[in-house]
Picture 1: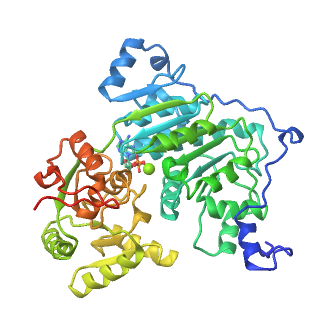
Picture 2: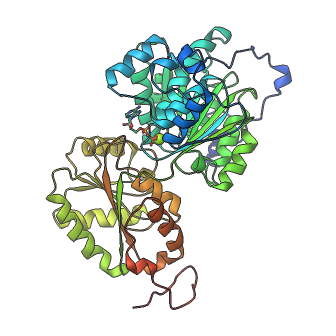
Picture 3: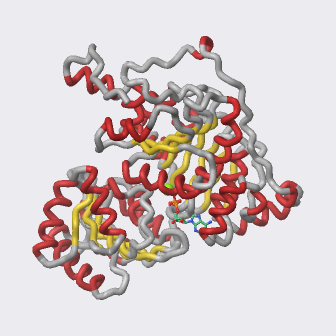
Length: 469
Ligand code: ADP
Ligand code: MG
C-alpha cells in the first residue's frame, strides 16, 4: 500500500491543518453524479406486529413511557422475534440473553428499518446503541446490491474516540455472522496505521469521530457520496458550536436522499431547531428524561471544603465490594493535580482526560474496566456515551457548566438494568443552576437537601448567589 504523503500544495502547517479539516471540500454538484436508486424500506416484520390493534400499541407505548410525534409512526416491536432481523443478528441477540427490547429499541427499530428519519431521546443506559446499529446492519445488507462495494453505505458519528471505539466493538459483536465490513476511524493515533486498517477494498459501515473522518475524506481515502444511513450519536453535543461545522462538512458530502437518525439522552430546543434543518419528515421519539436507577446525593458545601469531603467519601467507597468510581472535575489541569494528590494520599486512582496520549487513555480505560484501577479522575471527555457496567459511583467534584451535562455524567452509572449512586458537590458559584438541578431531582423523586431550597440573600452577581448562613 502506498504511504500517505502530504499534498504538495500544503507547504505550511496552517494550510495543511485546514486541508485535513476538510475546509477545502466543496459540496458535490449532485446533478452531475449518477446516484443509484435504492429502497429505504428494509422492514419485514412478522404478521403479529402488523396486525396488532392500535389500542394495544397505544397501551404498550404508555406502559413503556414512549412518546412519539410525527406522521405515520410505525408500530413498535414488542419482542425480538417480530422485528424479523436477519438470522445472523437474531443468533447474537439470543447469545446475549436479553429478555426483551428496551422501549427505545422497540420503537426505533421499526422507524429505522422503514427508512424514516428520526430523533431518539432516551435515558442514559437504555440501549440506544443497538437501537440504531441493528437497523444499520440490516439496511446495509439490503442496499448493498445497489451500490459498488468500494463505497460505505452507513456512517455513525460520535463525539469522542472512546465512544467511537465502543460503538464499533458492539457493531463487531452484532455483525459477526454477517458479511458486513466495518471500520472505526478516530483521532489521536497514527494516520498511516489507520489507513492500513481501512484497506483498499472499501467498507460497509464506518464508525467515526468527525475530525479524523474529514481527514480521510480530504485525502480521498473515503468517499461518502453513496451513503444512505447516517447516525449522529450524542446528537445535541454534535449539533452544538464545537462540532456543527464539521458535521455540516461531512453531511455536505453525502447524497441528499439519505436517511438520518439522531440519538441522545438530552435534546434541548437549540439542538432541535438545527436538527429540523437536517432531517426530513422525521419522527421524534422520547422515552423518559433521567435514569431512575441512580440515587442522586447533592452535598451543598464551600469550595474549600470539597477536598476533605472527597477524601472522606472515597474512604467510605473503598470499603464497599463494588468500588469503581468516575470522578469528574472541570478541566484537565485540575484532573492532573487532583490525581497526584489522591495518589499521594494512597488512593488507587488514575487520570483520564485530553492531556493524556490516546494509547495511554485506552490502556487506563482497560485497567479501570478490569478493576486494577478503582477511581478515574476525568473531565467531560468521559461524560458521554461510555458504557462501563462496573461503574458503581459517579462523583461530581465540580458541578458541570450546564445541567444537561450533569444528566450525562451521572448516566455513566446504572447501565442497562443496574443501579448506581451519584454524589455531587454544589457550591455558591454553581447557584445559578439550582433551579434546573432541583427540577431533575424532583423528576426522579430524589431527596432535595434543605440547603438547596434556601432563598438567596443577595442578587446573583456574575452567575453567583450567596446563600443564607
Ligand atoms: P445508551 O446509549 O442508551 O446510553 P447503551 O446502548 O450503551 O445505552 O446500552 C447500555 C447497556 O444496556 C449496554 O451494556 C447494553 O449491552 C445493554 N442493553 C442493550 N439492549 C438491551 C436489552 N434489550 N436488554 C438488556 N440490556 C440491554
Ligand atoms: Mg449511547
